Image (tube, rainbow, N blue to C red; front, side, top):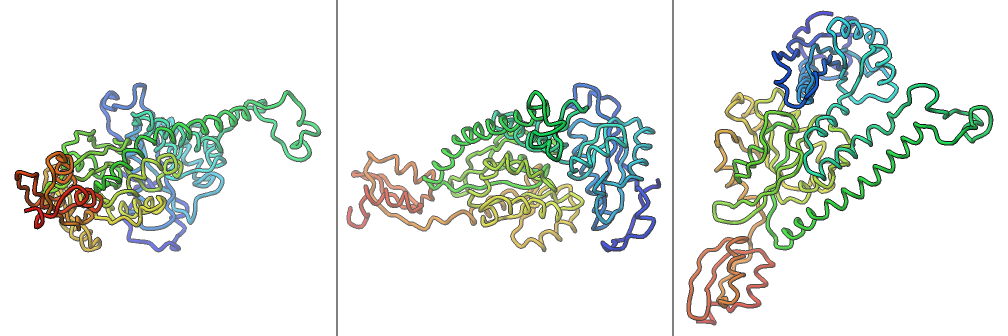
Length: 470
């Protein structure tokens, strides 16, 4: 064990003997807490955890950043981080994730620190979880289980809770195991068909019952989620029918999406310096500087290696992104690896049908805390980008102008005399279009405006061209 040194970038294949043999300690990962009541999410005693990751490619800085993010996830879940270790390998060990020798070293670290949990920076197979637990003698969880735990703590709405439970059960099902031989009689050979020693008995074992109950619960949750998403689909279709443009705010967790929504609309949604503080989508109305109405939606945050169970469970929520006319892709300009954040979010976009085809503007947030060189670097890489600070309001007027430019164009210009009994159409023109002038005369209202095709057709049906009416 030794302090993690500053290393130059290393090619993937350059694994020397020392790298293979050493568990590297990452400095500065210990959570300093004077009082456990400082942690909001944990009512009982804090879990004391040791973090461990496998560095397979990239630089030492990339590996440390990944473990630092795992530390933030662990603290968000209410844990006290005691230590962080990285094992340099070509690929994770199929049996114990870090190798049998390093697992024994990890056990010594756990004993010396008094930890009661080990968190691995990756998704472990059921076999890896079991064997690593047997070696280190404390509870072992992986990154996926940790993220699911945070989602379970932060879910507030009925739909959000159902989505998280579905994701947790999807993760749990292949990892379900009994303690003791009395819980399972699933054996090979002829016994598998119910013939021979071990194949006779009272029927389903407890673990088989548990699996069946989990599958039944998952089916019920899928039906519930499908039913609960109907109302959002109805509202979305209503907006589409009225052709109100939609903007979706998406991005990495804790990049400042909710702060940006509050700054643009005054929505007053929860803003907290924590990962996955907001899970339930929030849709609010906003207007451009010329008065045109559009909706803007805050979506769940993404993270590197977002568990596929969550992507599936939150698919109906993530459709807000695919159905938008414009995506504001928010990235934290003060983060150590903003390019990695952008890549991770776009990886999730690729899993959402239609999301990759929606026009995207990269909003580089937290400009008040970021290095100017980093901001310039991202702006050069991302041609369609803008720098803002949701906290101070810097760059927000320019962002609103950019949104106005990118919304679907109002390409139908009307100049009509609309009867007074159809004031509802005049009102819609104000809400959904760009009104150039309004003049009230004896026979009705002379409207000069740019509107969307559907409203243009309704106006032309009831109105008269101005040149023929006068």
